Image (cartoon, rainbow, N blue to C red):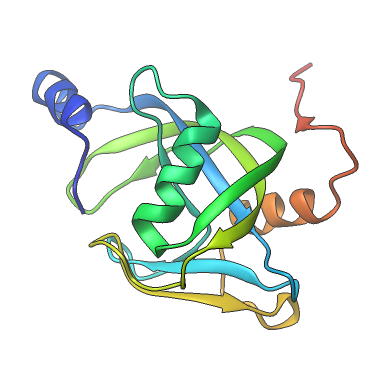
Amino acid sequence: MAIPPFLAELRSFVGTRPLWLSAVTAVVLDEQGRLLLNRRSDNGRWALIGGILDPGEEPADAMVRECREETGVTVLPEALTSVTVSELQQYPNGDRAQYLDLTFRCRPLSGEARVNDDESFEVGWFELAALPELDEYARRRIDIALAFDGRTVFALSS
């Protein structure tokens, strides 16, 4: 899985130490109400489409870019449904990161879902009642996006 040049440069200084990164995630629902997912090549698990923002990149633009790069599908982000913080992630190469995650509810505009880069083993549309195994964090963001009522969900630590 390719790492963006800015992140590779940063990793050359900090090694595998935890990084705080901004990320976007898409809950893409087609006209039949199916959800777009990919099976990641780094861990083999099914996941929502997403990735990190490049420096200076607008989050909605990053969402469109990530969907197109990973799945071949061009999307329209319709709403920012949640702002959350992931658990600390550790990758097979030892890199660690935690993400400020902006989740968008999106609809597809064009393109056929397919493996479009080296970040996925599989890409597909899934009925909500027949989703593959997903981690709790992904399920939570899906539930929030499906229940979206016009108000972005975020947590306050008291």
